[in-house]
Image (cartoon, rainbow, N blue to C red):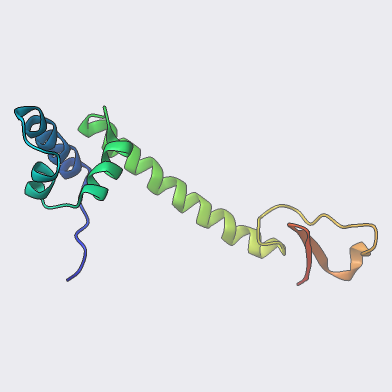
Length: 111
């Protein structure tokens, strides 16, 4: 069975349902089961979305998506320059600058 991706609005609504049902004397497992997720998922959502309103959650998700797009674009432009991390090549004393090697995280790599 494929996993369901919940939209941020759905997550906030489901967390509110749990917040309403738990003070009514039910154990945490029952309201969590009623919204159709596991306790682990519910606690993960609480950690991420506690205290946020729907518009704030939408903005958070949009920013995360934009950051991922920019990160991928940065990696792609870095590959064009010779080093994977996008930074200019830093040459050590033992490697001549014209040798075509760049230093990356303590290891050398030829282009």
